[in-house]
Image (cartoon, rainbow, N blue to C red; front, side, top):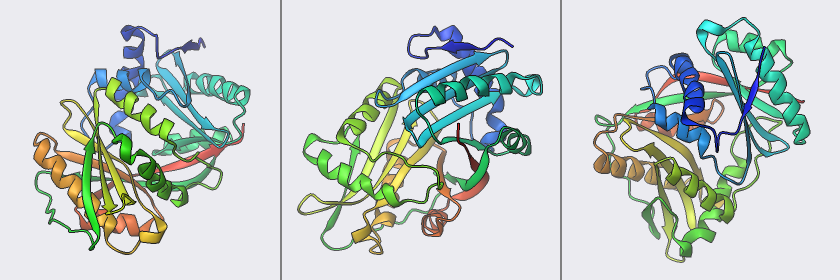
Length: 310
């Protein structure tokens, strides 16, 4: 089995098209009810990853693997094999290449996801241990009942498109720290956000022709108590909720509901072509799941995070 390492940053569109076509063939079983992304959207995702983490890609006959390393305990593996090419050793060969590189990079916890019985069996065969379950939910945006939710006294709602203003960047980084205590797999330790990471993410999204939409709850002194981020590609009918978080000291005041409702209402006004919004929440995160369901999100699938110690 021949496995070729690919530098996605410099690879030809023809090479990355092979990768994208494999991803698209696997899409329906992983994302039920969601429209297939455009080919150039998938290519751009792999070509323009933020420069603040390490990415590696491999192609084989009918399969690909992508490794994203943010830290020793925050390394993520995407491994996909075309349904017509499974059970021929493609996945095993790709996994071997990715695990070898993970070891070289000092990874001590490699995380992957599966959402099918076949995926679960593959993970177990190679020693991955199942952990956190993540619920993926969809919102039909045009018909959603999104009543305006005013923030508590002393807070205002602000939305930024594409870039966090320089004067608010430090406060936004602090606000994003709310994600540090979000439910996560036991072996996962994702590095905290920094100003450098925010700017790198913004640059990456711009190069992918994806719009970043950040809505925050801000106090008069510039403190950010809660935030939510939506992303969508140009011309797409679907948007994705990246993260939503509320600083611990300001929880229980309705800030998360206010920013999420405002974000969705603005998205609908700005992009009437968007039909669906997706979001993902840890199964045990009852508070956020309850909030999303009250806004009209409905669960469609569950993925399981599984972890290997290389």
